[in-house]
Length: 106
Image (cartoon, rainbow, N blue to C red; front, side, top):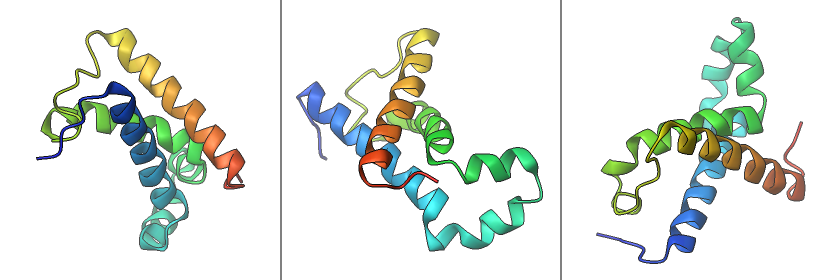
């Protein structure tokens, strides 16, 4: 069981996880067929072509499932609804920064 005592390490793992999963969904070959099939739905087409947009929803899912993670379960990511909004904004901002640095934006 991997547990990070330092909240900065937990935040770092969370940040990289959101970015990595978002990158795989938006750019990964493994999701290419799914992206093509969902491109008929305008909202999903736009969502799946934008790494920053995708990161918001990935962060929501990771946050909701964090209690099942050995890396995140010891940390309470959400104590109230405002925390969820802040984490979604944080994820969008950090994903934009990382994607800008790596030239991964559209």
